[in-house]
Amino acid sequence: MKNKGALLKELFTNLSTTGAVTFSSKPLVNKMLSYANFRGAKLIVELGGGDGSITQGIVDRMDSDAVLLVFEINKSFCENMEKIFPQKNIKIICDSAENMDKYLGGKKADLILSSLPLTLIPKPSREEIYRKCKENIVENGKLIQICYSYLLKFQFGKYFEEIKSHLMFKNFPPTFILVCEQ
Ligand SMILES: C[S@@+](CC[C@H](N)C(=O)[O-])C[C@H]1O[C@@H](n2cnc3c(N)ncnc32)[C@H](O)[C@@H]1O
Image (cartoon, rainbow, N blue to C red; front, side, top):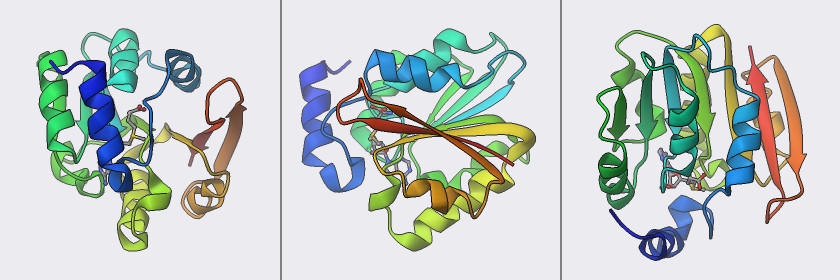
């Protein structure tokens, strides 16, 4: 398993695809996940696993018979998460979020939890991610995105009916939590 310093170096040297200089803090993860209802959620998708900080929060809360798919494009982060999360019901998928449907086997997710750096993802891929999220989430499911830009609310608004935003000042930089429902 990589230590925190090595993970931060990986994050920092790949800024154009990671979009962050630090990983999500525990208070941010707790706040983000407080908007999700894990009870009964049998298929959970995480987009942008990184160091596994949000993944760990999900694992701590999810039902023991739930399945978690974690999408992450950075190979080094994937290899590290495979070591941290060897459980059979946690699948680390080293592929882009825009290909999520290929791994869902026709099922829909109850929850999608994302820390993707959407403002850095080229528009065609980004739009494909929004479209796939909408198509692959159950009717009463929730997509929760953390981001630094309030403008993303309007992009999600093209695909989701109801979006609630919460600003977490305590985090640096201050972070928005967008809770999207159909
Ligand atoms: C801001 S970091 C968040 C990492 C961690 N989840 C956290 O909250 O600290 C965003 C992560 O998304 C990954 N990523 C970027 N584009 C992606 C894509 N298209 N599909 C899947 N993961 C992606 C990056 O490699 C990076 O690890």
